[in-house]
Length: 175
Image (tube, rainbow, N blue to C red; front, side, top):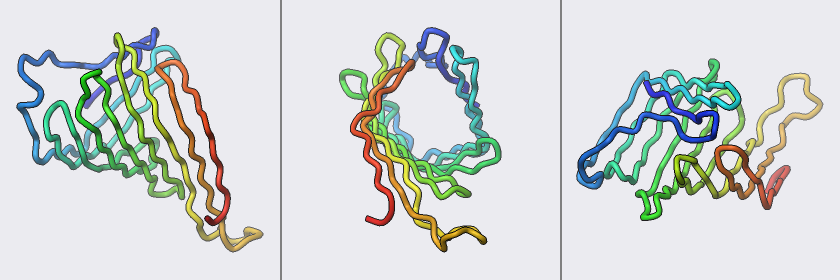
């Protein structure tokens, strides 16, 4: 179980162990987490997101990255498979993160390709995001036989208090 989040000033609040060795010297060839739980807390809005039945199957080339794997979690009864990969921690402390989440019972797919940097305890991020709905069969009684696909992509830049979406593109229907 892991609890992490943002305090009321937007600074990270999470258990970071004090390690007395080089992060590059430890590698985990296979890491399997089953029936885990992550609680994400935002003190400023007094909100929390609980990821139950969390699973991860992957590898850590070193404790400084890269990390690669996939798994799933449950939020409010909805099952969300995901895949994640990260780069090594760069000299400036930044990490490139690629995350894809594809809910089981919803026809949506989302992807984020971000660089995340923590400056004086405050996270910043920059990159691109995409949310898409695949073409599908319409429910019985609908005026059309199919549901059209759509995709929204955008550049994103932000920190723990705000995010700016730039160059937003919407595609509706087939390519």
